[in-house]
Image 1 (cartoon, rainbow, N blue to C red):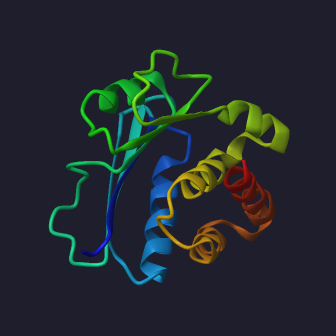
Image 2 (cartoon, one colour):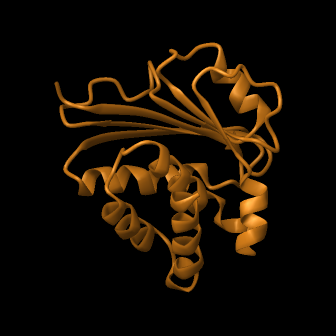
Length: 172
C-alpha cells in the first residue's frame, strides 16, 4: 500500500506555519509525491490562530484537507486543544512544552521550542526548527529535499541560520 501523510501545522500567526507548509510540500514534491496544501489564519496577522494542512501521497490526492491527521504540530494550547481529542491514537502530536500544559499524554512529544530558539540566538527561525523536529520524529520527506526546499523558499541572507535551526531540530 502506498504511503501517505496528513500533517497539520497549527499555532498562531507570525510563527511561519504557512511558509513551513509550503516548504514541506515542495520537499514532498521533490521526492516524487503528490501534495495538497491548505492554510487558514485569523483576521489578526500576528497572534491569531493560524494553520497549514499538508496532504502527501504517492497516489492522487482526492481530498485536500487532513481528515485523519498522522502528525499534528501544536505550538499553542489552542492548537493542541483543537486536535488532541479528535485524532487517532496513531497520530503523533508534537507540542511546544512551554506553551502547552494541559496535555492528554497519548502519542505525544513535547519540545521546548523557545529554549532551542534562545540557544540558536534567533527567534525568527521557529519554522525551520520545527520542520527539523518533525523530520526527526517521522520520515516524511528526505533530508536532502527539505534542505533544497528551505534554500528555494528563503532569502539567501537568512538561509544559513535557518539551515542551522533545521539541523538543530533534526539532531535533538
